[in-house]
Length: 337
Image 1 (cartoon, rainbow, N blue to C red):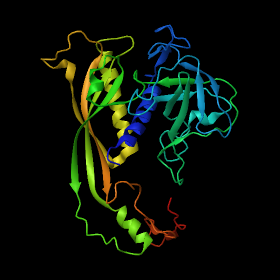
Image 2 (cartoon, rainbow, N blue to C red):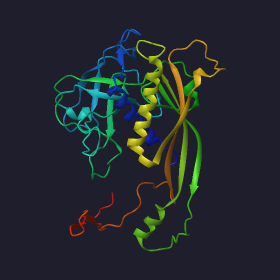
Image 3 (cartoon, rainbow, N blue to C red):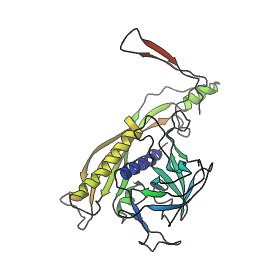
């Protein structure tokens, strides 16, 4: 993929989940715009979460929820394509909660961040990261699938006033309110490999796919991240802590989702600079760096994981501290997705 958008979408969901857990979730101010069937309120701290008044049932994919008031989210709201939020309190169709099912995860058994894609002013289609190990789409964003009839209840809680992480320089100039996080693409630094000349004349179909999906380089996408935070209620000292929490959650998300394919760098308090132009302000702005490594293949249109021939098996020797005790495990045949 030429641009690591899918990684940023997943980061947005994980950052939202972490902020909600820390108590930075936003409620819904229905009176902000006289919210009605034709007008939306706004997400802000200090209010009750946006209530769910309807939810599709068993087997429906993606699950679609209906909100009590217009959610105010549009597909243009961010490059993430919807609302990064945490769904809680739904009974019956509990798949809407998107519970982390990965036994290796630190959040196993807890709700994940969910992407709510707007279908109408009061409906959102839910997508979440697949956390079931061993499945073909493990780690990817997939449509949620209903597992029962909705029995009532449910709330929608985002953590960023814009609904999710924003991308691009123009987003930093928009008049909005804290908390918000913007990713600004800054540069691409390729680490070029030394590929051999592929023979596309081969008649072996598996060999052709192997060549087409070979990694020939690693592109490191560098971002400048603007994190604007503010405490509730605003407080000169607590504002710094609220902003620092945004950066901490970005760092945690990069570590959890990208491992050694992602990195964060140091930052600066932009609004505290001696020549800062912002005279009347709320909260604080912390700017820091994030890098995401993306493989480049011979055929960038294919992408995906390196090709594995059908029927491939694997084996490994597990050696205990006592040399006499060891075991060899042979895995099942691999079927490429």
